[in-house]
Image (cartoon, rainbow, N blue to C red; front, side, top):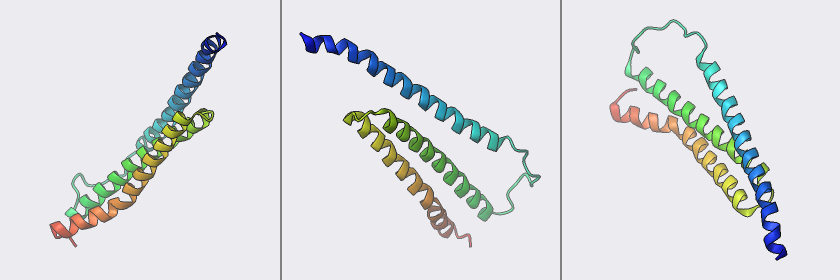
Amino acid sequence: MTSTAARPEARPARCALVRRAVVLTAVVLVLVLAGSVAAFAAPPAPAPAVAPDLKTVLDNIRNWIMGILALLATVFLSIGGVRYLIAGGEPGEVGKAKDSFRHAAWGYGLAALAPVVVEVLKQIVGVA
């Protein structure tokens, strides 16, 4: 009977941990999004409306791919860190945090490989 009595006490503590994780994750996401909005809010430099050549277009694609992948990887890294801090030694939650770290590593790895992919694309298209 004592084990059933202990379960209702564990449930509010678990709900509090989940609530805290959701709040911290929301705060991290808001900060990341606020930083990205601030970066895009800068006044654009005067530039021609059309890219001068295909090489410039491919370089711009590379920069966008790297930026998006790095942003997503940073979000996964932040979520993993918050999950790890809130896990409290619970194996399932620690596993989820490690999965987030693994996904972040994949994102950073793909962001690092983006220039290689664009260079291969340049060779296929024939742009020097």
